[in-house]
Length: 527
Image (cartoon, rainbow, N blue to C red; front, side):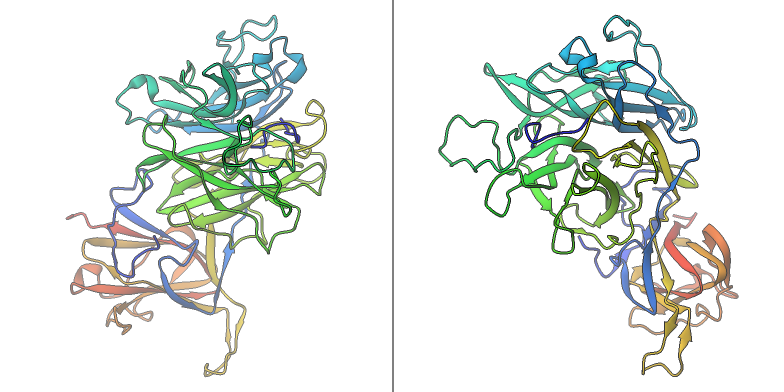
């Protein structure tokens, strides 16, 4: 569903880190390995003759996985997904908008449920929890309050550690709620034991947000009667995740900031709020806005965030209101603390709109719930065939889809084509090196390199903390890494990591026509 002017206008790594330092992201290998992603230079001391390139996601050939084929599914997009690590079952929640086709206003924009054994072929169970018009058996699991505007967006996460089984599934969404006899727009939450049967939290809303007209004057600090004009508040779209680095739940979403004339509702930036219990949320903080390198028309539709291998990633929905009723492409941004963000990949969208009249040729809506598998990472998304901020909500194509990357290949480092600086003895072709910050390798039982050396070679060598090569662990001693693999094993001719003296070492990657994406340090079996 699209919003109009009167709708909801609402540490850096240290230089010497033990290789076994606790990681924030939970996944099967977290107890036996540490993976260093080369998506930024947080773990890089320096590099020479290289450049970093982002890897665009690859769409699945079966897209869209979920189509509009029910009367309550005029347009579908917003979604979250969870894969049970024990059963492999995929549970997916998506927003379905039907507008005036619903005889009850509470049903104009609902949350629906689908599930799958393989993450590709989804079924819509006939749950019978909420009827739609005269249809009793639907896959609807949550409806709106029926207030001034419709319930909007839905973000679901699963918290297996919650001591209350009834609250292990958690949902955040926008709606209009009543407090002390008055209606307010804002953040709502719901809880479930199974992802199907949901109970809304009785306090509504938990955070108040803005609802007003473009250009509205900013209220005075002592002005009464403008409860719906809330500067620097979160907006209608919310994406929640478990920030295990900080030990909180965090929501990132739209946050309005003021225009050149000081009027409200100019553009959306990225806002953040957090909570320990999913009920009491902090004052929202504006953490990122469009800048001088962006087109004047560009803003952030919303910016879902997830935490993986000590890196915060955001799949920012780049909204361009100058094109096609507000089209949306996806840009990847990174952060090491969730507050200070870098946008080094603006020139290449990781997920660009499709061409022609495809269901995802107009707007793409990402989520905060990637699915990490052994060989790949899947990114589920919703999409429209038109822009997101204008046009007819009932006259567009839409669907739920998936795109992916090979495991850990968000961005890679490869040599530049030609290096001919005066300080070189001779020009170099497709040669580069990456030197990581000092690492204590005590207890490290092996090194794996995620690299594509199908057109060349890669080698790993070790240097002392002060930059001197270690005998037996040089480039010449390393067996060349060849081919394309997520897990190249590093081997030296006559030495093993257990032969190293205690201390910190620089790990250097030599590249010849090869790209490297990550380095994994395996825990020794004796530890």
